[in-house]
Every structure is written in C-alpha cells, then in structure tokens.
Image (tube, rainbow, N blue to C red; front, top):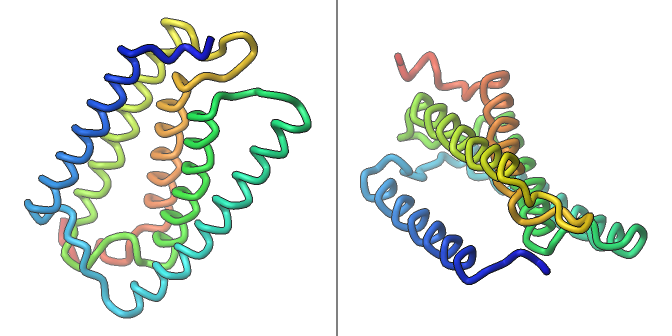
Amino acid sequence: MNGMTAETLMGALVGLAVAAVLIGVLIRAKVLDMTFDERQERARGTAYKYAFIATLVTAALYGASELLVGRWCDAMTGAVLCFCVGGGVFASTCIVKGAYVSLREKPRQILMTLIAAAATNLICGMGNLVRGGLVEEGVLTFRATNLLLGALCLVILAVYLIHGTGRDEEDGE
C-alpha cells in the first residue's frame, strides 16, 4: 500500500549509517571545521530562527493541505519537504549574511560538496522516476525525496554562487 518494504527500510537505514560515518570522517579530517566568529554566530542564530519558523509554517501548511485536499504525499515525503524548506531558508540566510562557510573551511570544498550532493540525489531521483513508483494511487511517495533534496542542493548552490562567501578573495583558490 505505501510501498515501504523491508528491503527499502534496510536501504534507508544503511544510507543513514553511511551518512553518519561520512560526516564523522569529514569532521575528523577538518573538512567540516565549524569555527565561526561572533558576527557569523549571530547571523547563524538569526538563520536558525528563520529556518525554524519556515519549518513550522511548512508543516502547518502540509497538515492543512492534507485536510483540504486529502492525502497527496506520504509522511516521509512531507517530512522531507518541510526539512527542505527549513534547510533552504537556513542555508540561504547564512550565505547572504556571510555565515555559511566557517573560518577554516575553503569555499571550493563547499562548492564541491554541494555539487556532489546535488548530482547524487538527482541521479538517484531520476532513477526512481525512470523505474516508476514516484506516485502510487495518486500519492507522491518517498521515492520523490531524492529529487526534493537534489533541488534543495541546487537552490543552495545557486544562492552560494550568486552571493558568495565574502572570503573568496582571501582564500586564493
């Protein structure tokens, strides 16, 4: 009915475990070194506030849409949609306010990570699109989440390329 099989659940759990290990490796390798100055910390606090509000509003709209038009997407897709809005607001606000890249990160690393994340999610999403099952019985399924995450990465990448970090000149790369 909802398309969630034991195999799909296992795949999702393995994906989460791999992501957690990858983040741990990046932090240990100092690729994700979150050292921000006071101005950046204040800007990130504002971005968290905006993202929290955006996530709440999106969740409320998602819930209201279910009441008004019926079930149009499954719970996982709805949750990822709310995450994408909140994450996009947070990242965009940080980028515009010059607080996205920490003092020790290199802008090129951020660009490469965004490109890789966008490409990976869009390739997986296109694979899901080709195989079918994005919509089952008129309901958008969790198979659409890769497309949503890929779109989020593209939006963040576009904002990053338009607004930059303010550190590109200092970085020398």
